[in-house]
Image (cartoon, rainbow, N blue to C red; front, side):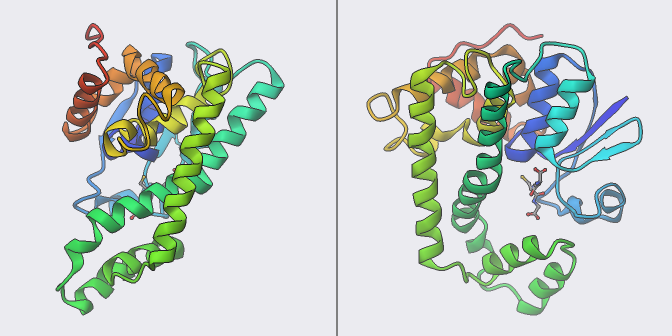
Length: 260
Ligand SMILES: N[C@@H](CCC(=O)N[C@@H](CS)C(=O)NCC(=O)O)C(=O)O
């Protein structure tokens, strides 16, 4: 039996959900409400002491890193293979997932959280904020939250994150000019890893991601959004990411797949 603890089908939480859906593997889903700080609750910390999501538990074996967890799922369960057979393509898949996890996703998260989360802390009691920080187990997450809570992210840091995201958009568009999917001719975990964070890019960054500047990336986004398994996975959760995904499909003229 496989149990998956995630927030909405978005970013790291989206990865195992998209992967399991693509493979057609049944699983038990537990919603962890990040807005209510449930990832720092004693119940969740007993599963993942780092207090990060997702967590995936297979027959008692706990996985807390979403990218290796996807490789595990692909290896252990039946269903279509999501890793290229060819060693070079598999290497490319892994390099792209690493680039996404280490460089691109943290940059996008920094930009989004400074825009959306940081303003919410203005005027709040500093002692209360410090108490909230004390509950965060990982020092790097604590530092990131401290910067948000006390608005101390520098303009240079934001600019560097913007530069990294712009570079990634160009890099992915160039790769997708050569083949339909990120690691070659077949859909793979690299597509899931990037799509989980990039699915809304044409809506969030229309000046950068559009028909004239990034035609290949846009075609790929449409191709991903068309996949019935990804559409189905967007329906997991409380609905607000699912609603957003539906709006993006409409904007991209992607039709709704038959409900499975
Ligand atoms: N390397 C981990 C990262 C997990 C992670 O950072 N998840 C975010 C949500 S996308 C999280 O739990 N953040 C908690 C926080 O910032 O407090 C993975 O890939 O699973």
